[in-house]
Image 1 (cartoon, rainbow, N blue to C red):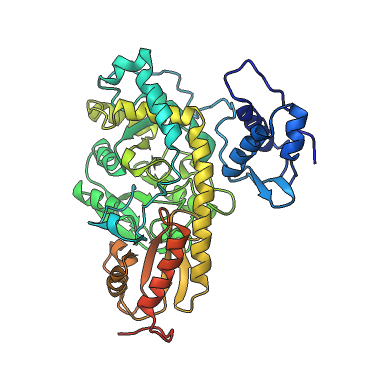
Image 2 (image 1 turned 90 degrees about the horizontal axis):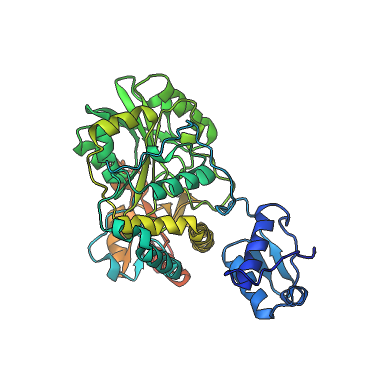
Length: 493
């Protein structure tokens, strides 16, 4: 156990507990405190710093809640493995890959659609739900208040903003993407919009003539529907345990590939490095080809290091990057962003720059402050711990059931897919579950090339984001009643 050297400043606005928290957090993220190292007891640290015990307790409690340290009963506090935690507070100079210096600031999924009545059900296992109890309400209120009281920006909030979104927000998103996902871009390449569907509609106009796009099947159907409505032809491409098979993309005039490499919806596949390189090679083989990277649920990975984004790995500028704050902050914010490759940026400015922004300036500046002041980092780290607990519990409960054949999508995201060993259809299971106040979705709804074969086992998508541990336990018990008889035998038609 090493003694902590913390220099407290009584003349700063930051409270003593915040200074202690920040000093320990920096030492952990900087490697000066290593994983497994024991920290001084709260009593000892308080005595050394000549502060109250409650002040140190508050700092340690904040560090525990954000996943930097853990408390072991009767033993003390120990440093956690922080390789998966984001650290936005580090003052690393952002270096874009294009060296664009001009700051042109002149005016120039999400989630599944809500099912009617889903808010009234007792056990909502539908995908796309977030934990509403864990949200940083106080921090959000503070950021919104600051945005409204900013005398310099107050009048501007009432006017139309930049079509691509506020420059300050785009700069904050740019820095976040570089640190967290390895995305290389400048603020000028980012377009902020109200949801991924809107950004895909905008992209269709930027690209011009209708194209042929390759998509995995099963996939995120709202993206599929959007492509169809803008006149694109969608080619269903088979996938294996590593995701889309680039070699199976038709040798026709397919020029776009839509993928979710960080956490594929609905199977939860994480595309390994080798497959990512194959996909990039496909795009770079022809000047008109682009990969659309929907970085779905990339923030929530519970095991191992994250693989960098496709966009950051590409040698050529052939990746269109899509991201959203829906799951990481809130779905109702309706704030997504798209990073355009430089060749497409000129086309955007020519064809779409006259569109007004679809996100209010007030919302944008609130999120901007949320990122810049470090609240987003703390919120993500806290929520990752909350979701991991629910994820691990659901996996533990399902793995011990004889009626569960296989589980897809473990270790990431806010849902898993469970293949059940019974002859009931997904619809029959959903109807039985609804009798008990439980809502589930079958994966067959996500296929774009016809439905699943009749002889295939049912697969349910089980979201856990907004469920309590008690609801998860009871929900699994309800599923068992739906697929098994009183004796525990699997039900058939």
